[in-house]
Length: 336
Image (cartoon, rainbow, N blue to C red):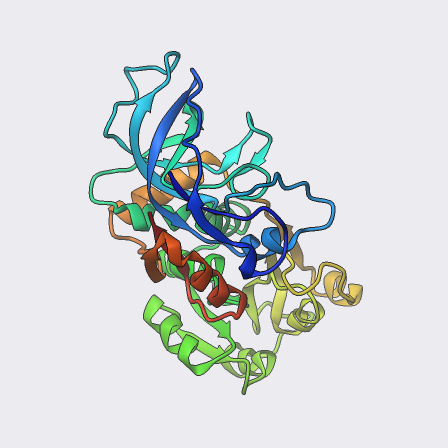
């Protein structure tokens, strides 16, 4: 079968579009023909190597996979799964020891053998491309916004780094429940795309200070007043923005984080945390129920995954290069 493979860590030059053996089908697994695979923010990091994380080599990237069953293992319940059935793969591979595309061989290939419990049926009317956009980024956003963050109607929500997969979903979920959304991005071109996703206010941080923007828009936060500032700030950037965003968060506001793309050990200011009585809420990954809910939301037309591009599998290096250069809004999809 055809696959994108790298045998050594490094840059895009390590990626090869090549023939490799089709995977072995175990008794408890189903063989899935990959119809769409999506990239995530960790794909460049895995390629370059994350210190302390053991990635098997040779490695196939790609953690978000949708396809159709072509073969069923002898121990798989025939009453639940059928050849030809459209399925989404939950990337959290507990049986195999990690996350698909990170510590388990990924799905940027023509066929993948998957444990039965990692399969989720794709509802009628949901495309392979839309389904593949969901698991890692959208699943993470769903858990962070609705379960951990309790975002609800009337909330004023600020999303930093809104043009990525997680951010683009945060915008849609917040709007879905009736929140007012301000979204930060780094270019005018991206700003227009975020408006199209539903953001009420878009801040181009290359020319505007988002803290000043929010204070003008929603008022200056006050220690002894519950008006002024954002009710919720989504900040998975970390780095210098961590303490900076405190100045835009209202009294008893919620600060949500699911990562630290710009640095995990920033300076902080504890005075804001106690004096404004912030809730700082971490969110780690997704549950299967998040993915099932997202598929239903797409089926019902309540959200629509933001697809930056859909390209043939062999063009994965081009899409990954755009991801590295931060040119992507939403998700980059590859089709074997």
